[in-house]
Image (cartoon, rainbow, N blue to C red; front, top):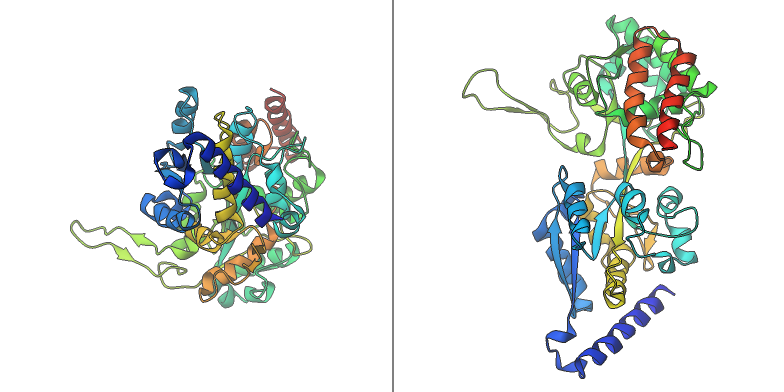
Length: 446
């Protein structure tokens, strides 16, 4: 069905071009369809030369579709696209996340509906969470997914072994239960006499980690399933917050954010980090020298500054089956009023997201495929030979609900770390979570 769709689209384009030029086979300038592709910095998709190399594969199949690439800077990407849209200069294609494609441009009716690109095979092959994040409640699709990743937590494995806490983790599945987490923290506190972990809350940086920690411990939810309201004041979430505040080995620290917590973890002041990712696992730590003119000290990736082993883990839950926060990358198509360009854009999406260019396209993101196979090719061994990627890929099975699409999200993020600060100061958990829900849901209602 997918190959047939591609053939029909290509045939439609040929007929369209022939009508424009009178003789499409002559190859004059009218034969070429010009597309603009803008990309958020998803790995090598943020590098123009790398994207153009990928496009050479596409052009070997579709030589008449010429794609001009612009790679966006992460900090200015949203504003750059907004300015272009306001000026009537939106790109034809945009590689971005659901936050942009679904929540902003799709919700404003500016993107083409891609639901006709999905068949039963797509729905069977594509991760359910990624799939649901690409559709509106009325069945429109403004994003065709390409790759995904998850955030997690990490432990200082050597410290766990020294404290006898390694018995409470499973490195084969990278999972542990809530009870095992409790016992591990007790063992670490008993051995080292200081908190092993910190619930950081000085600001929003890294807040996905504390949200995942709290909601996983006893099976709570951050929002309802329809993504219309926030549900942080559930009994499960309250129980988790009460547990964390009661644990000697866990501190609530309103002086640090997620990045600063990770730095303390790198330097072994903490034995557990709730703010971890694939990038951190793969990136060497660089310590700037204290002496002027001295060279920086570069530590091995996956190690603390003293060479102790860092192991990534899913968040603890009662069953061990966690729900991890994640990222999704995919393509959207701006409806610029030219059906020929929209059809050409769909061919590009199919080529990279479910065609012969998929393996290279996903590897370029440095992340993981959102589907089990592309055009009949099994993607399970995409990262074969890379031990860290292969191990980390296990966590993608635990990707949780993409609730960031809930209205009032910016307010909810601020309310979250404010909630943690109030609890750190001794606030009543029931009252403070009710306050969060009241403020966040008021923003969600607009």
